[in-house]
Length: 145
Image (cartoon, rainbow, N blue to C red; front, side, top):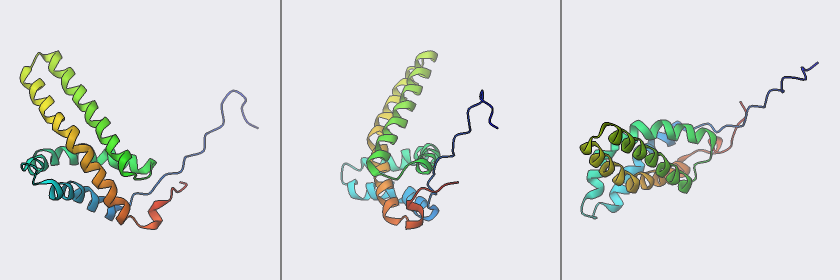
């Protein structure tokens, strides 16, 4: 008999299994492919790859892993997710800079996240494109755990 006060447990939702090979190839290949296709633009993407690459790996890796467990890897959705994450970090940097009255942090944070708002969604879009092309069929369907 079920207790009328306590609600029954909710069923565990279906989740995607992340294809590890496709994930890591796309994680590295997305920014490199974007840089290779747009490096002629005053070499800005080359510098963005050098400056933003570590941030992309530190912040993007866990966010992408979490997102891909719950959703399909639609490139436009991943680009929007990257924009939202970078906007959150821009807000965080601005709040810390205002709270500490640090103009250098404010300027550097806006400069860094401003370029991140351009390159982050582009890298995430290319990540999603590569991941969907390389992902095996077994990983394309959500599974019950």
